[in-house]
Amino acid sequence: MLTKNTFKHGVHPPEHKDATKGMPIRQFPFAPVMILPLNMHIGAPATIVVREGQEVVRGQLLAKASGVMSVPVHAPVTGRVRKIANVPTISGKMTEGIYLETFAADTQEVLEGNPVNVDHASADEILQGIQDAGIVGLGGAAFPTHVKLKIPEGKHCDTLIINGVECESYLTTDHRVMLEQADDIFMGIRYLLKVTGARSTVIGIEANKVDAANHLSAHIPNDLNVAVKVLPVKYPQGAEKMLITALLNREVPSGGLPVDVGAVVVNVATTAEIGRLLPHGRGIQERVVTITGPAVGKKGNYLIPVGTPLRFVLEHVEADPHISEVYMGGPMMGVAVSNLDISIVKGTSGIVVFSDKEIRQPNILPCIKCGACLDACPLSLNPSKLGILAKFEAYDAMPAHHLMDCFECGSCSYVCPSHIPLVQYFRLSKSIIRKRQEHKKEVADA
Image (cartoon, rainbow, N blue to C red; front, side, top):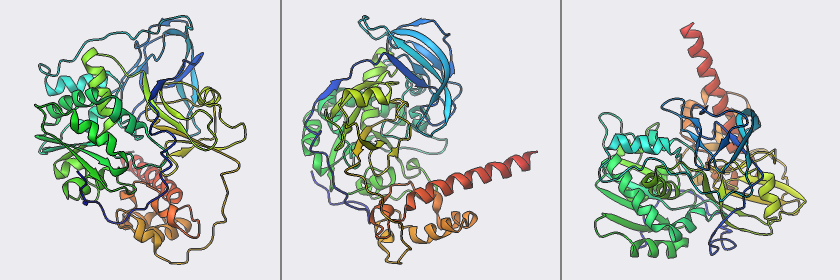
């Protein structure tokens, strides 16, 4: 099954997956209080439909979608709404949210909803069901899935790609989902095929997960046109554009989307959630998270209720008291948290914890023009040039060098011998450019 097709450039960071890849998914305990931000997805925050003091059942709607680019929030536990107030988030900002007190003695059965029958539902009804379930991209982006699956007028999709690559170091969430939730994955594919109109499906998996590839290959239903392709191990092969190049030999144009080349890419865990939730009309209340790193005592893959406080998680897995850094996601594309009072959200694919012994702060040195970042960049950008422009705050010149095409994989920072935090420069630069563009639009509309 191994295909040698891949993308140009990329890097090979240490995998660090052995500690958890063989550990089955386990249910995580319910925290005494859940913290639920209303903006745990890209787009408009959800709108609260409950009141303080109200008792709710697990799976009940707490906040409804506030528009097309929004998804609802469901109760991860049966309990009582303790208060509605600002809650901390990974960005460092406070946002509106719900503190939900868990009923410790309750059975925590999940509330049933209105099932979406894949054989009888229309594409629009399935899209509505996906939005009603609150499903977003579980690979980390948290982009509303129903928006991603809506094929624009004049476009078509011939191939559905299920992303089981999971190239990020340390993380084994998708690996375990593929081994343990094959039926849900194939049910999810049925929904996705009907929505996108694709004629075929390709599941892309890296060669360090051959057991998952063999398992899925052996369980493909006879009536589904699904192929499993194993790809060489290389980072960032799990990025949409790179995966399309590797599997279909098609290149998404600058500023374009996968559908521009006839493809739609969906994360394998997201696919499994669609297949698990829609037949019951349920909302997403939990997700699989890899908790690992040198400073974690009880490493593993856990099914964790959304809203579980990070501090509670770290205590339960016996994290080292001398924590230096905690990443939500992996060390390449994840975000280092500044506050342990934030909570697990829908986009949390992993928690990687390091102690003081593993973290060193290298000195940032001048660029030596070695070209290592150019050889690493999967989009063939010039990170060195972009880094110099960012250093001198020449933000207006950066879009001409395709800054906005950068998806912040971190390959350039990883290989830089001068330890220049290029990806952080680019992230900040894009934020400043977007704010300037918004300001110009406001002035023009005034």
